[in-house]
Image 1 (cartoon, one colour):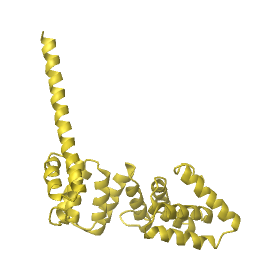
Image 2 (image 1 turned 90 degrees about the vertical axis):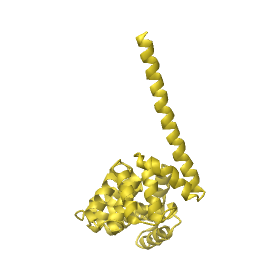
Image 3 (image 1 turned 135 degrees about the vertical axis):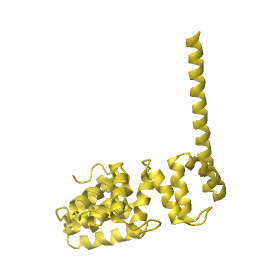
Image 4 (image 1 turned 90 degrees about the horizontal axis):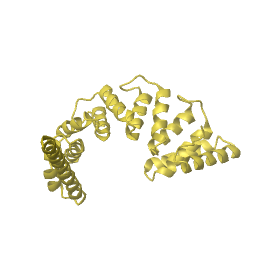
Length: 242
């Protein structure tokens, strides 16, 4: 009889835990729906309790609301506090954003070393943004010792995830021969991929850089680079001329 009672109590306990989890998940989802509709007041009301209870996703979202002044008065300092709470729990988006805030000195004291540290935490989790920004820090030599090989390595990780900015930057390294052997074919390939991956201004920049590199290449090299870009894209960045 004791075993039966214990089993019933355990079952009830698990049911209670799952019901709480489901309720919180529903509350978070309701907050997303409200936010997407532009009802920031409701989103804040739903997310604030979750954030205070330690929900990293809600903490990150609150940070964004304070960063952009949505539903609250814009306050970089408060945004940084919420981003830090989420970042310390391993939220990679919060880690990248906190890195950007340290790099720019927004809401926190400007600190390149702290920026690089947060970028690295995100990068090591596989965040393409974290990998790109960490690569940029190695190019600039800010917060870390300047190291073009490290920059190329991190840019490549992000480029393999489809980051147009990383593809553009990696193309530039191949064009200049910084951290990698100078190779116009590879530069052309990465510039082409960046140009096709983005419609933003840096997509046009990538196309312009591709055309500049093309002037220094033979028709056969251009054809090779174009073929490499097609294979790379079709393989979802698994076969990129390596």
